[in-house]
Amino acid sequence: MKIVPKSVAVKSFLTLLLTVSLTVLLFACRETASSESDGVTRSWADEEAKKVVAAIRREHPRIYLTPERIPALKAQALTSKVGPWKQMHQRMGGKQAALFYAMEIGPELGAKMSRNDYGRMAAKALMDAISGGGKASPDDLAILYDWAHDALTQEEKRAFVDFCKKRIGKEIRIHNEKAHGYRTSPKPEGMIAALAFYRDGIDDRYAEQLLLKGIRDTLQDNLAMEQVAGKDGGFADGTYYLFQLGGPPFNSFLALTTATGSSFFFDHAVFSRLPNQLIQALLPFAIERAKTGKASRYFATFHDNWTSTTSDYGSVGSGMATNMAITAAEFRRKGDEKTASLYMWLVKEAFGGIPYQAENPVSFVLLDETIPSLGPKEVGLPLAEALGWDEKAGEIDRDRFGKKAGIGWVAMRSAWNDPNATYALFKAEPFYYHGHMHHDSLAFMIAKGEELALARSGNYMCWYEGGPLRDKNPGWPQAANFFTRTISTNNLLVFDPKED
Picture 1 (cartoon, rainbow, N blue to C red):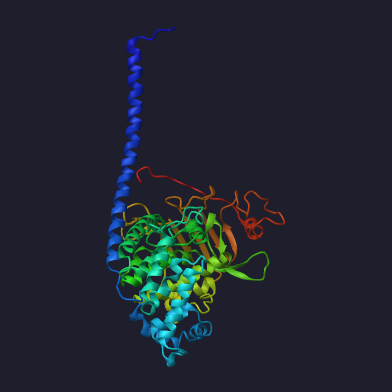
Picture 2: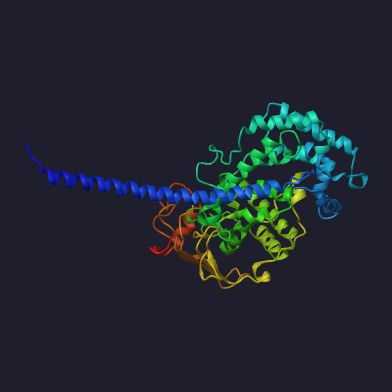
């Protein structure tokens, strides 16, 4: 057996001890830094939650609809919204009755029964949904409770609160793990319901606890989407997932805005800025896929850097278009006609207008189809735009905590209103945007008249990756008439060690 000198053994032990100590210290520092960062964001989210909960009005209605908005809605029922108004009367259910009750309509607006009868009809719909054993969502039933509040008996109000307690539990869940296989924006379940019965004297402590923690957790979780969006509102590769996997907390943030009379929606809903990026990503020309005979406008580099037509989104696209139109109406309500008109242009240009809403009472309250459609040229958008760049500071965009933010795009075109315009997109992403990012990231593309002169090639993506490009069924109809025209791939990724 070999004898190791004592001095050598001690030296080896000390070296090992030093290595272990440094390793522990390194991870401790990382954990401390992470904890400090989490502490800052948690403290901020706590204060924001307390501020908005304290501002919730006591009066009903307050979810999407307020007494101050009712006079304008009555006028619209006889003018710009006469069609949906008639449909709500013809296909009246509990929610339509709740709206008629809240608006206190009379014969001049087509009332067929008394206000009290409308209220009782809404109350019955609420009780039937609660006792029916179905899968009614507390958030979906909240407008029945809120809009017909004064028509409900105390027992009916308590029944709704007890129903919410049973369905929601001790806290608002901000992610439904069954629906969110990928990392997406939060979608709080139960926040609108808690907002409906808070300050009604039934169980205010329970409602307040739900709201404070739910809003705090949602805001803190939403910071990831805020960072990606930056001030310009772009999601690039993550845009598809944003809607496909549940969408942003659009309705919850909008309900909090109307219930508090604040700018909460514009302060925190990244969706309110998303159309800025989509306008820049819209190619100047329409493209026909697989000889279908129908041409569609394209957004450049959506999911996995894949150009996508607006029609590809199906029902998801319909929801996107509706929410964009609602956002345009919110901009008008706050006095920003320019942004409202620009967003409405995108809804019409890319999605063919506001999707059919039928007798939906929430859409009747929130949409405004009288907003004029003004395109980028008409409102004075430049032909070249850097998204994710702070013009005033002359540096990359930053989020509210100083971290790099925004998608890092430069979009350029020779003209706005010319289908023969040349379009170029340059991309230098400061970070990855979602968990499902393919390795073949597009660096730039140049397109003109349906010919993509320069774009990503090589590791193309079909419905299944690696499928033969010229196969009769490549899995995605675009592959056959898109990638055969690409010329080269151009990727360059450089990290600056001085940047965080």
